[in-house]
Amino acid sequence: MSTLEIKDLHVSIETEQGVKEILKGVTLTVKTGETHAIMGPNGSGKSTLASTIAGHPRYTVTSGSITLDGEDVLAMSVDERARAGLFLAMQYPVEVPGVTMTNFLRTAKTAIDGNAPAIRSWTKEVKEAMAQLRIDADFAQRNVNEGFSGGEKKRVEILQLELFKPKFAILDETDSGLDVDALKVVSEGVNRAHAAGNMGTLLITHYTRILRYIKPEFVHVFVDGKIAEQGGPELADRLEEEGYDRYLAGAGTAV
Ligand code: ADP
Ligand code: MG
Ligand code: MG
Image (cartoon, rainbow, N blue to C red; front, side, top):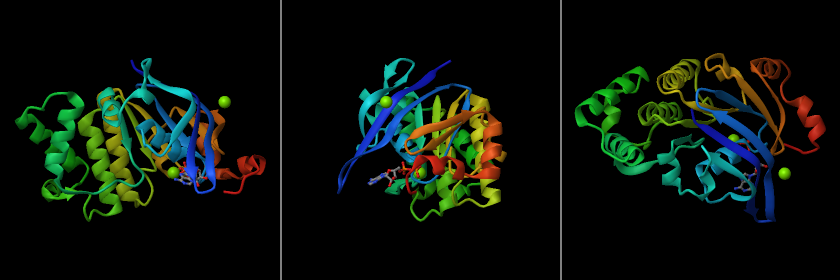
């Protein structure tokens, strides 16, 4: 079992108006095998947490820690984080012009594992994973994310998740912009990755609808850069009915 531990994390960014603190003391522990949903209104800092775990240079950790089995994640480069077993599906996946999906997947897999996958079984695995995610076979020869629709990018993210087999997946708004069919396909992929690899998942979402397909054991509500409430799946049910108004009334910030 592995543990991703976030302790009293404070994160700031540079803005034109000066330094702004976005995360104001976040403490959260995720173990492999567990699914945690991070929910909350827009602007509450959910993506900031995801980007900080991923090592985005824009975000400065002013205090607190992130460790993976005791190793300091914040001291790791972005590549080292991936090799340590962290997977981050970005809210806005980037295009990689001139690199085909096939080459990208194999290169990334090799970098993450430290050795190249056996070609025959790898090709088969990629093919099967693509079919399960209803990604057309000709995507293999297309450039990464170039001209992909929003839904196609999300499927390709989950394809990477299934192939790279991380210890921890941080999925930021994987549900945004998906129709019900695509949401189902993507959720099934996450659930397969979960079942196959004893993965820990941080599922970040504004809406509750993805939680019909992916069942978190733990729900954390983010408000104004902090966890305002924690609970089990019943908390997500309550949010579906009540929304976030109750938290915002007390937060004193416009969002
Ligand atoms: P969420 O994902 O919950 O919607 P974010 O983490 O994206 O929230 O944003 C949290 C807060 O930080 C918001 O007030 C947002 O405007 C601010 N913020 C995030 N990134 C930047 C940035 N690069 N420049 C200015 N403000 C930012
Ligand atoms: Mg603090
Ligand atoms: Mg966000």
